Amino acid sequence: MEQTERRVISVIVMNEASVLSRIAGLFSGRGYNIESLTVAPIPESKYSRITIVTAGSVRVVEQITKQLHKLIPVLKVYEHADLVETEMALVKIPMSESLGDIEALTHAYNGRIVNVGSDTMIVMVADEPMRVNHFLEAIKRFHPKEIVRSGSVALER
Image 1 (cartoon, rainbow, N blue to C red):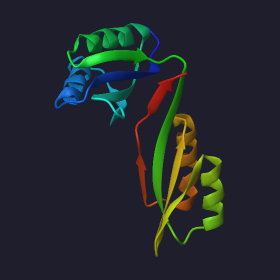
Image 2: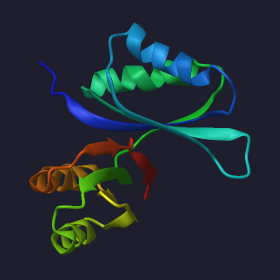
Image 3: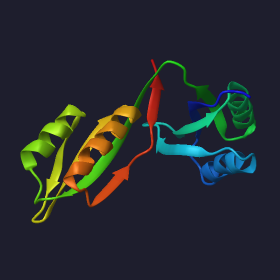
């Protein structure tokens, strides 16, 4: 049995309607799961970068990248080996919790308090996905009311 590994794929596409649905359809039609998906326009161009996190064997990921190359609006496909990858999370926490402790924890994970209201505060962290996982585990002791997590973004070194 082939070993399944987490993989990050970046796809440069024309910034036009239906491209994302065609790429998602490629994955779902072949039974591949997308763990994370982030799309954003590339500044000062007519292109967008789609960052996809998936899991599969080397053979499966090769098959996915070959299929992505066949889609017409796709210009480039990168399957990252040596990359810088970041994710972001926003967490809403009751103001009844310890502000100093929350601030210290948040700073340890490249984050900060981004909003303080009368009954809640919102903190933001941006770090490597595994460190975001650790932060979300650690912040549980402060009884978060809501957590929102972005998908990964990545660039090859």
